[in-house]
Length: 219
Image (cartoon, rainbow, N blue to C red; front, side, top):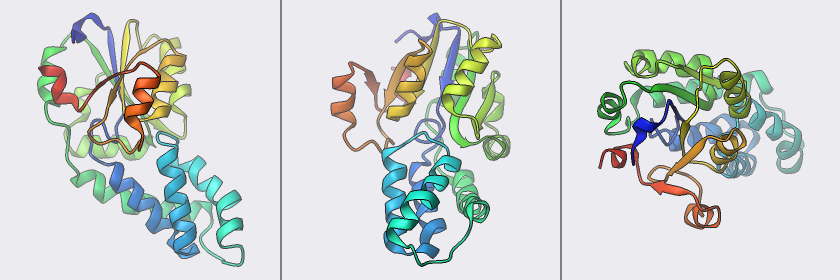
């Protein structure tokens, strides 16, 4: 696959650049546990089936719809506290999880290409983690995340001429594909770390190109 024909490469973070999907899944469970195991597991199920959506929306849905169903009499943390607890669980995991093999080498092979992170993760948290891990220098187009959605970020950065066509999005979720195609950005599904249970059927049904991980782009 010749990536040098693209002006811009857009990377999701969790499950693409970092092996952090399981870190965040467990953090959702732990943060929601004061409402009971059933409610916490229901949040996890919602999170996994809505990969790429921000934590802000997921915890709002949790309080509005899941808690009344699974723990209506339970008094637990409010939205602000849930987000704070979640962030505390996540941060250590992001600082220690595996980085995609071949990332630095791929950067060398695409020297003239602008790289961006567009993630459902918290933007401030992402920028801190990437700086501490020495990864921020790879993404000369910027590191972007929630509370803005991926769709909002892509549209804004295209309008700002920060994402220039042709562009290419590397993701691992259904939402990644939806956000990319809505902006006419070519898409590659990376499945090695994905949490999409039926990803094989998903890519076949939608005729999506797929590889296992970033390193495979170098082959």
